[in-house]
Length: 368
Image (cartoon, rainbow, N blue to C red; front, side):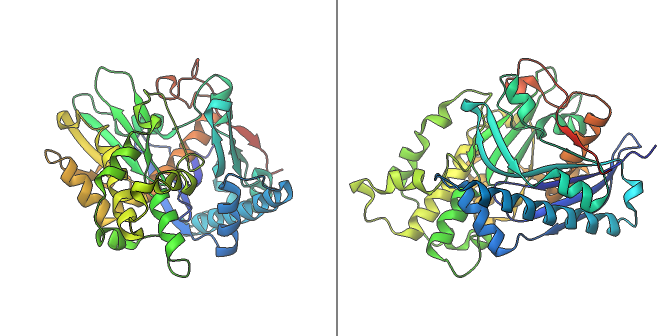
């Protein structure tokens, strides 16, 4: 029986759909292929609208769900071809879908990207809906990737801290002799991207290498007020999303009279500092081990410069040094979660999410 799985992932930054093909037959999983497809602009705008606080129309969501599924299926097919394999060689596809709502306090998380459409289009069984079982057990439903980090990266004698800088940033703490911990630290790229797009509507969807932000000046009073937000003081387990850290959240600060004269470029610079500081304050004891970065934010030179400055005693490495490329890691995690489901193994870590117990995550959508 084949032990090759496909993983599909698109994160909160919506910078593209990642597909991986992974062979789990050996002790160390082998990445056979990895590819990424951009989300078409019209669909991207539709998804951004569905993520915004508003009374979204159900038909719009359903239409977008089919479009996301078609894009996911096409990306999976491309990765399988890149690995020189056929559908019959794949045990299952693990599809995360595209998150448009994540409200742990209301015990639900909504990902779109119809798994049935992916299964039919690829002729491969699909495992999806990984988060809601954890939430039914009182958990946050996120982050789910720390359990994969533990399986891949834990070391008997060395503490390792895995920092994923996606739309939302999160940290996994792999400390020998201690329970696995992982949680969302706050905004990674999401506010940077949204604020940049607001002021540059006809260019890129992101601040390339943080160049615009770097040209501004950090406004310390604004930064301190943002860091005083209640989320940053919450104890783990905790998770968040762009439903919380969005432009309405940012505008609630900018509307204050004392910040009325701050220029957009200075706001962008301050948002870079916000992401860096909210990550750095969760690495207070990382000098006892090593820090490994992954996610799209590790390509933002200004953000990494600020992180390095905030953590002068640390060397920031990348997960590729541990054998897994940064951009492939999250998609690999959902291939692994699909395998856990097929083998009837638990996929969540209750010490991370706060669920009452470990559980088998996901639901099966057969191709037949």
